Length: 310
Image (cartoon, rainbow, N blue to C red; front, side, top):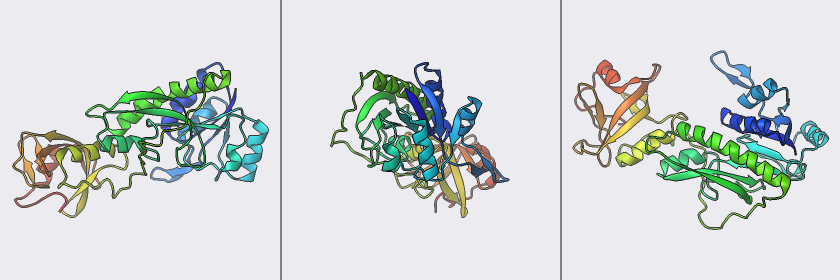
């Protein structure tokens, strides 16, 4: 089939690579978000998908909005059979959805209908899911509600951050998306409507959502830190400034600390929660580089009566 691939961040690149390597399909063009400012100089930088497409010599389309007349005209000229999508980052209007004969097929990083929305991996970790996965589905105008072509499962490991899990899903999902294109082409795959039960939503995680509440149980604190790593980054406050929490570890044997109260040992820092303590492993103070929590604690010299998140 002739394909137009839509995607933007690094997590979409493995799927693009899989389609380029398939040997069965022609990736005629790539649709991605416009160049965005990045770095200290805030210079405009192309998306990872755009960079990979340019390396492969593929036409790159960067509409400000996918309803732009010039983009729609070019899409009709290319006349793709199908448009595979991975984390494109913009809503597709009906006028664009109707262009390819086989529609736009999205790779979504959850087992639909669970965790529809922008942050499925983060929410799966924060909810304590033991199994997640990826799904390919036909895009409709509803939020991730279209019929499903296929799924692949992936265990959530006890120490997974959202970055760890998303990396694995990106590669597993790349194979799923490629196989889905094969099945659509030869007619062996039919999309199946999602069940009405089991629907959960996964809105974007905000900075406010990433603030740790020390009154919650230790497992919840751990899940919030892992779910918000690397972005937007879990945090608490100390002496009125934000302290980023990069890695923590529940410590069930320490139950004598009140929520937010730190206990600094020779080589460790433990903080009370709503159940038992967590050990701070890596933190990042405002304006500083990431460091081991024990080194941070020695530097700031936590005094008696001081707490985190006060």
